[in-house]
Image (cartoon, rainbow, N blue to C red; front, side, top):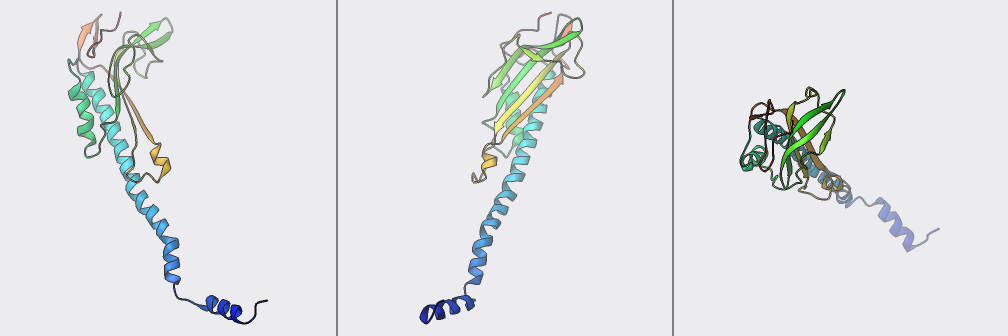
Length: 195
């Protein structure tokens, strides 16, 4: 048991109400800062994701209409659609592909591919099973893929620093040249799909 002066100091400390506001604020301030950062980062991340998704669809639509000698305007569409957000680090892969059938089994193969900040697909490589609605032998389609790692304003939210957007849009060919009896798109540096 305390006696004398230490006891008096302890009683006075327990009964003292000065500085309570400062202690309460020091507990609440970090929570308020996290709410502020979250209210900025989460909507920003959502909007960048939506704009990248729209950009992937727009690029697929653009290249499905015909062949391009230069894809710079198509790649530039990503920046225009995603404005005011900086998506210059986004990896974009555009692919023209076809469906091939060996009896009852259908598969898809890359005919031509182009990229911006990414890795183009190898001509003749498989894309796996055909997408819905493009399962007949000779069907032609394009694929637009956009991938970008999110860079938050406040990197203290560790889950956001590892967040990667991945969008893939598949679009039927709606124009282009006729090769082997099929309308198809040939991307720069590529060749038409084999028969």
